[in-house]
Length: 367
Image (cartoon, rainbow, N blue to C red; front, side, top):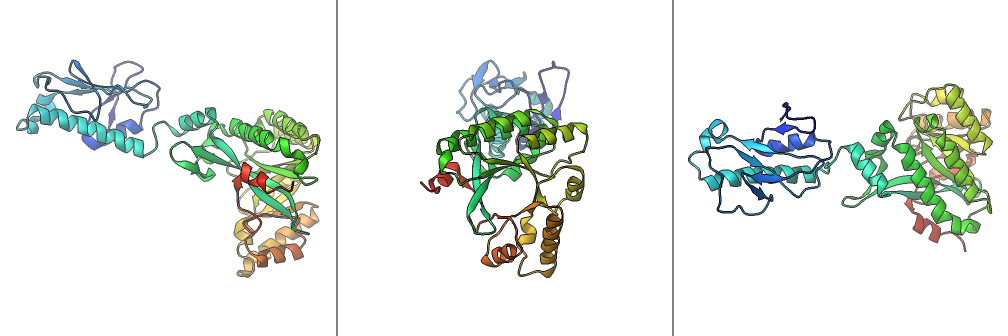
């Protein structure tokens, strides 16, 4: 639908085919204004046309002046070449049809929520601090006392509301935007928790997800140092949960980064252990402190013997390697009892609290 012509480095020519204009809009990614002009006049899409019409013998130019789209579009109309079948309509009909096509394409593009490329939209959201922390409690497997939390990222979109991480985290990791996004998340947690540091249980731990991109960037060490120093009056433990969406390759740089994190007292966990192809490789190649049993195994406890055997084997592996365990997705007392009788260190799931905004979580802390 998009036809590139030699019209300059900053221009793309789009041949207008009604609703197919959306396909043209979808290809754009540059930052320039979009406008609508008919002949010598300036038009705004959605407003009624004036009585002054351009002559059908000459080409017209369509352009819309007020738009948030990151590009400029000019449509050139040659009635003799492209509208042979429309001669029976009035000139007003021709302009109305063209404007309707443009408005329809713009409307579809707006409704699609893709006014910018995904990476551009993430950059915009990062600049406006739209990525916010949600907190989920982690309790002791021994006495169900709250001992920490996992910090989860949500996108507070100005039009779509709260967006779940599965819709934007993969793009963020692929573009390395996940690094500044995590930094902003840490900053918000520091700012909101530090005034109530003395209300946190002793030895409270914060868990943050990190990806392969983080483990190649030594700024992570400084981010963790600043986070830990904020809570000097009531020392906390920082846990970094390594995900498997992007493969982390063992090399000297990664080993050095993990060593520096351990020197700060940071613990390294493997998130969703047992579900990815790299879990055992990570366990073999990196200095790991915690395994997190994936909720897909926990959810089948009491209903599926095979999943129970998998959980038992993970527990046995952790005990043999002297690793702590966190069971994710605990939702029933049956699951809780099963895991507690097997001395799982920590439990996490809806049974003990759903992910919630920081303000709601802080309101539940003991005075």
